[in-house]
Image (cartoon, rainbow over all chains, first blue to last red; front, side, top):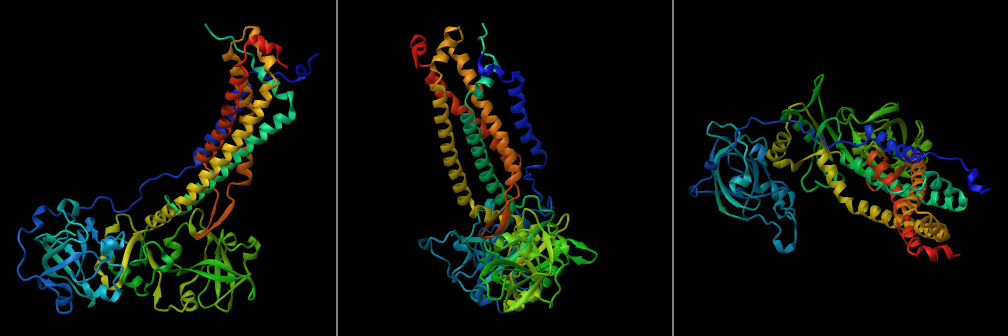
Length: 190
Length: 392
């Protein structure tokens, strides 16, 4: 008698059962397993109006001033045409709140040949020099309400040299200069 | 016309012809599955710890400009927490308490004994509000540390991070740094976050210990329903004198996850290479097993079974062993590997054997069965029936 004939006889169902047990084991873990990529960002839709292309000025505003020279003297409520270069942070522009940072045009940023991937953050400038040379620009409508902005659509990007026209906001500290801008003139691209 | 199949019992009973070969095949498949589970669990565990996709709050970190990729390097004015709390709209509040948590994150050498080896620990100086801002943190034993009492509490994976046995960080034990003994008064869990491997102590104590009374590392704020990241960002951009950057907490950890991507890739490549070795070993075993059965295969063909039917039967044998090995491997993996703590530079994380990893393990095991059977079976059938019947 063949010794294999003593082995138990398995129905073909056994293979299916073995495989399904394994598959079931995997699927059972599915219920408590993977974490979703659900976006939980708070805020939802903003009701802030968008700045249109009319915020871009066709001609250079008269008598623009540089940030380093003007920052110590500007007072809240003053009207100003401020010249600067977009930059001063790794992400200097935030479309959702229509805000960007300007640096004085004399401030040094890493030239392209140095290979810095984010030259607009002025990482090679000391914090003290950065504070003396920076200003915040917030786009506002003619009624003074903040505007959101699509900076790509407006053709603005970091290291662009611009002149903004607006009024100076509250200055809680000498290092803070916020210009509520109603117009932007692009002098040159970065 | 349907192919005449070999009975399934034939394949099953053939498995018992050589128990040592059966054991080798089973072991090979089990090891390949364990390897897939270990590497998959490593990748998933690290990913889940850093990516934090399912945080309960939308947190934003205010940290120093230029330190957006490393909280440990960040230094901001200690007054930022108060200014931010008063200036940013949309911050979550409960009972008049704003969810604004000033924190110090620092890696310091601590010692289990005053004259013992320096162990690299990740410490976080916090105020009680940190427990509101980080609801993932749950104190499971003891109490939060009190300021000025040289007390701290430890995360569930802190012992792994320090390379100490878990009982060495029990309540009442001490750790030594800054020339003082610090008593452990609490233990917390924060699963799937880097915090789980940290030591927490009052921020004022850590400021004194690190001689940085005027600065902290960051301020973490939780946004209320309807609160906007843009408002925190606007605060950071409006207060340029404070030299701040606003980063979503999960974006910060996602950037760390991206930093570790090459390590995860290396783990996967290593696992694939070793698994390939396992598959080749399996092939070798199956070649030997099938080569010894050339006459039998010739006989089956002489009896009228087609080559396809014979290949199917040989495949059934191989897949059956591999499937059994895969299930055994998954069982062992869930028992031995799931939740196993692994140390890395950011702290520690637990191997995570979730559904995708388990399915990958099963797929790996079945691949061993399928890939290991077909080439030897085809080779075995290459001989003409007459020659096969004469083979020894």
